[in-house]
View 1 (cartoon, one colour):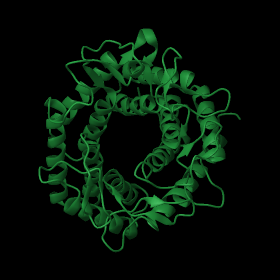
View 2 (cartoon, one colour):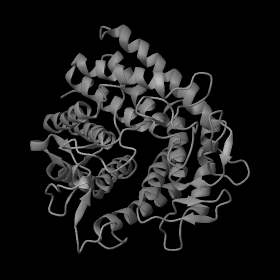
View 3 (cartoon, one colour):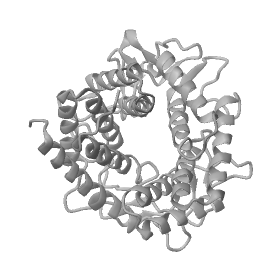
Length: 399
């Protein structure tokens, strides 16, 4: 297909249809808990609730989604009401006595699982930011600032949580927490003018570009040595194309804001590397994990096709096209978009499957879980809708 106005009109229309008819309608009619508040997430193929425990990740993510919808996609009262339900539940049930957040609670808010990480905090902050934009309630902003500052403490203070790997034996650094700190800081900057946000963003980008990206190996790594060097172990060689492309478009957003050509080109390069290695030329779709040297991957799910990986890829490719005008990026977008419609979509049933076998068949009938809620696909189609609107209307990046 030629990349012209009709192309963008066609896909813009289809993106909006999927966003509202397949994704948003599923969650707005099912996820809000009418008994205890907050959000349910355990849904089967037909959208029937099959488990009631609540993912704290999904509480923050759902708060973000409903607030974002209200702010930018129609100001429907049902979305604001849903957001308030999640906001109240998070504040009442999702924090430990020392202000760390749980990973899972029961339907009525009793604690279940607490993990050593602070991703629950990250998604709560994102949700608070959007909810503050919707309500202009200063208490919400204060909570966002307080929780963000706690994240900065965790991020900058060694020993706040026990390490995953014994540092006396092997010291390493992980990419995912750097990525999320950058993105949370980008969110916070939207509602507060404190300099800490740009400082953290600068630090994160410097770390990603100079530590986790290895030009000689044409890859962004998930794990490196404490000194930033490559580790020739299965964990050190492991590549995660989805995380790499998610990081890439976070950096692209920053490059657009800064009008920074070099930064944008670096992020596009990461996207290209990720797809060159990550695309399954035999069966289609993008692999979950890969080994740099094509050695066996220890993770048994390495060749699965996950919905969120493809969502991040579509955003990164669309930003790449917007910047370069190179039609190959849109052809890459279209290939992934069609793969998603063929394999993740479930005609006659709501929402997408989350996890596929290598051949594109569903691993399970689950449509919602602790790991799959209204975030990656909803966020992607929101971002894509807005990007396609800009491109369709001839808006240029401007640098």
